[in-house]
Image (cartoon, rainbow, N blue to C red; front, top):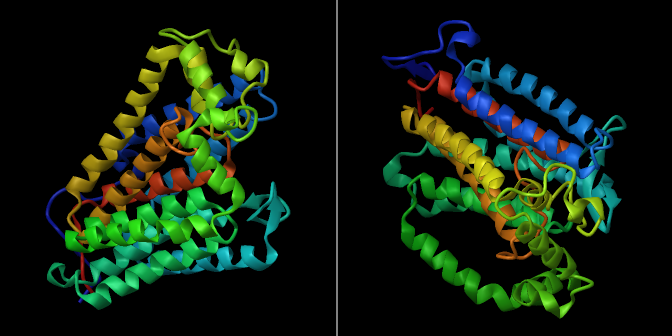
Length: 376
């Protein structure tokens, strides 16, 4: 029996130029260009040091994204477990060979570039879990063995990331993995039980959190607790967002950026600069672009014939959605500061390339939407 059985309907039989989902590509490119514009503004109207790097990575990511989109879907399917295993080994390498920066050991230094494997593992986990559930009949997804294996696949990288330490990325990875499990059809009672277990474990987790992590939670509850220390980010971010008004102060005119009131302005708090300089209506346009991209991803997921393709596509959409929501909630003071980037906008090479590679996978699966896969 062949691994893939072609169904009737649209198939990727012609050149990529006739098959790729160009509206999705355009939405990604527009968001990336918005990131370049913001990096230019944050630097005071200068392409150095962030904007030109972001632009170069965006172009590289675009090439890689289209190359992945042009792949035979069999390639992605067959490499799913291998991708997960390789990135897991990289995470393990961080434990022993990782580079320390700002009190955390999260990067591998390859000489020409530093790579953060905790970003890549998100896609690897989605691919591996979807590959696992492709081999499981829907009636069997809630069997204990079919719960234990996915939980181990999620838990192992989460443990390695927690040790770096990177609590924010660990939480996002856990949510991404569990979203795949949920979308696969596991009975809701397991999630309810798991939620109750998490609530019961909060005191134990609190005792084992680092001092700065505890402080972030306490400051989230009361930013004025430490206005010049841990609460400084949130207070300055709220000031910036509020001062933008309806139309904003204009590019390069944001005082929070220009006068260096806001730390991490080019990474985690980039949306604050956007809201201050382009105001409510500019922010609304950005949100509409994100919504368009996500709509196109979820629309593609609905068209997928195979369980594997549906799970990968929908889970990538859910993961990106979580990153957007958590980042916006964080900069508005609605969630603790956990260091989550705004997709395609925040500065960071590994993060940007991971999101674009993920979209490339979606484009590839969308080109083969009606291709059915065997459970072998």
